[in-house]
Image (tube, rainbow, N blue to C red):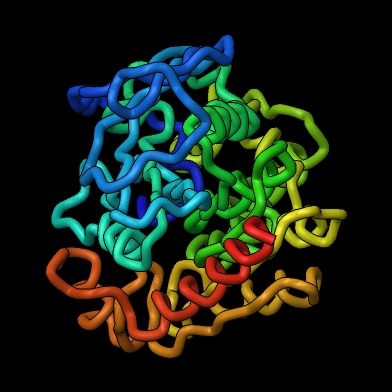
Amino acid sequence: MIGLGLLVGLTGCMDTVNADATASTSSATESSGGSTGVDGSETTGQPACEADGLEVHVEGATGTLEGTLQLPARCSRIAVLIHPGSGPTDRNGNTVGQPGMNDSLALLAEAITELGYPNLRIDKRGVGGSAGALVSESALRFEHYVDDIGVWQQYLRDEGYAVVVLGHSEGALLTLLASGVAGTVGYVSLAGPGRPAGDVLREQLSAQVVGPLLDEALAIIDSLEQGVTVDSVSPELAPLFRPSVQPYLISWFAYDPAAEIAGSHDVLMTLVGGTTDIQVPITELDILAAAQPDAQTCRIEGMNHVLKAATLDPASQEQTYTDPSLPLAPGLVACLEGFLGLVETAVDG
């Protein structure tokens, strides 16, 4: 049997999440490009200042997307768009349906605010306040999430900001694919994978499954990588490879993060990884850094996947996933401060 833990960080992103939408208290960008400001007024192209935790929304192609905008007293022209990782992970970094909270992305947003930079952390379609925007599983594609990021980028541009996109885990690949959008000036990969999802899945399955079931799983991955669906799937493999989710997997497996980051980019980049991350090992950071040597790289000693200080001991890891009072790992904020300063200098000329 396949452990359900495989679904976390791999295919949980296809699960429909029945979470209550948060109330939206401000107007937003329409998908046609029209927008209103964070106070409900027409946008002026000038950044707003000092507002804590504004609930904002935009209209995506399939429904309303929601997020939280934090504005420091300093009116920086740089805004950071924070995208969560895979599965039903919400804007705060918590996984809907799992016990406990870590609040990793909420803590990150607060730290970025204290550095003096506006930031917007979002619920992706199907999660939290964006639950109503999810299309049917068989119709969902990886690129839909990239399109949603583009709508949020437009929202921030309409508010007068130059945008830094920051993606955590799987969100790092999504934001990388969106980093070429006009008005985007910086990119942060935070615990982002360096290998294609198919390769990662092969590795994880090979460590947990044996015999004919493993052979079947590997054959399915091979087929999906060729763009060919598989009609017959063993019940034990259905949580990962049910026919309705295979079109999404085909769209996801097509991307190689290292190849994507090695391409031509007109934005400043920083790559961040933690040495005690047991979900996306630090070796993934090395792959990305080798592919894009012009990027700044931050290896955060003792940081795990939820951005907290931990050892490799399971008990140490578990505590960080369920205790929101634990702070961000030392070194992470300093890394982001240095990078955002470079971006701001470049933008201000």
